[in-house]
Each structure stands twice: as C-alpha cells, then as structure tokens.
Length: 265
Image (tube, rainbow, N blue to C red; front, side, top):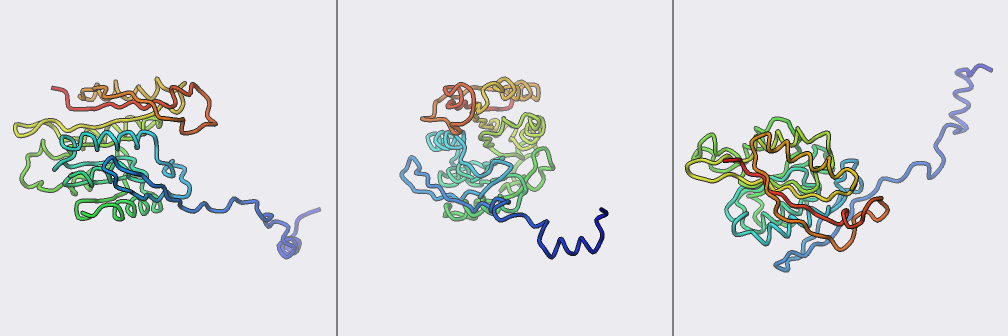
C-alpha cells in the first residue's frame, strides 16, 4: 500500500517514528579531576563531558610532561614563552604558568566546548591571568594569531619570532596529522640567533596501541628531515594502563616516552 500524506500525518500523531525512551544516550556532563603539583598545590580541572577529539581525559603524557616541566622549571619555564598544542584540559600549560613562564598560549581544536573548558581551567588555576592566552587552533593552519600573543616582538629579530618551549602531550597517535603538526612546530619554534639558543619542543607520548608504535615513532624522522634535532629525554612507566580494556602488551601501554626537538646546528 502506498504511504500517503494522510498516513504520514496519522503516523506522526501516533508517534510511530518517535525514538523510544532511552534510545539516545543523554549528553554527558563535564566532570572534574584534581591534581596535586610537586609543590603541593591542589589544582581542579574541568573535563568536557565527551569529545570525539579525546579532550575528556587527562592523558598519561600530560601528567608526565607536567612533572618534567615542574622539575626543570628553572631552565625550561622561568621567563620563557610557551605554546601548547592539543592541550585538552591544559594541565601542562597551567604548570608552565605557575612556574614562571612569562607567556603561555594553550590551544586545542576549535570546538567551542573544548576551548571554553580549557579557558576555564587556566583562568581558575592561574593567578597571573594576563600572561595566559587560550585559543582554538588547527594544526598546520596559519600561525599569525599564535605569534601575535608573544610579548616584546618589537625588540626581537625575525628569526627570534617564536616560542621558547612547545608542549605536545599524547598527540602522535594521530598519524595522518603528523605532517601538519610538524608544520606548526617548524613555524612556531624559536630559531637560534646571536642572542639566544634554539627553542625546545617537548614531545611526550604513550603507545596506547602497541602494534602501531612504529607509526607513532615515524614522526621523528619527519622532524629530522625538517631540520630538527631529536633527543630522547626519558622512558618511564605509569602505575597502571589508561585503558584496561584495550589489547596489547600492558608494559608498553604503561610506558611514556619523552623527546626534545631543537633546531639542528
């Protein structure tokens, strides 16, 4: 029998095409987590309820790189400019702001909820808010706005236009974006000059999918081909895996690798 306009109206009135109760999952609300710094300061971070971009977690590499930054604050952070890519909740950026960085720019994918929560976390946990900026940014896109946040640009040469420290925590799993990620690093990492040494990009990651570790590591030959020196800083184990239900060697999935990228001589 043909489905007529009248029968459409009858179906609508009867609610035949209405989704049954509970058919759609309710929108997940944001949550909060606490983090204690090495100095004993309690931080409260809000996480987006759910994100296809994985911004609703505090990742293993974010925790590890935050500890590394705090431990080496006197050389890495004091009076330095810092840019974080893929910041999610922004813990490493907060650590940088709390430990003497003169300018911190935290970025993530330009999703409004993600950026709003990132901004909330930095504003609520950082007393010196005038030194902190939050922005949405797509890897590989124009970097003019990111560089516009740098202080004292009028007193530096073109080669010095860039950040002293870049933070990349658990970003390498996105293999298709490696080239775009590298493009942003090459455009935002401060180059050495007669007045200063090279900036440093800290790249920390966990191989959550051990069978793809080689693809994760493929980022570093790309970086070397782009004119960067790659130095391994650490290899450490977390107490437990982040995703217990995942497959693969648990020892590998608990591991965090830390690398530093600087401009080659």
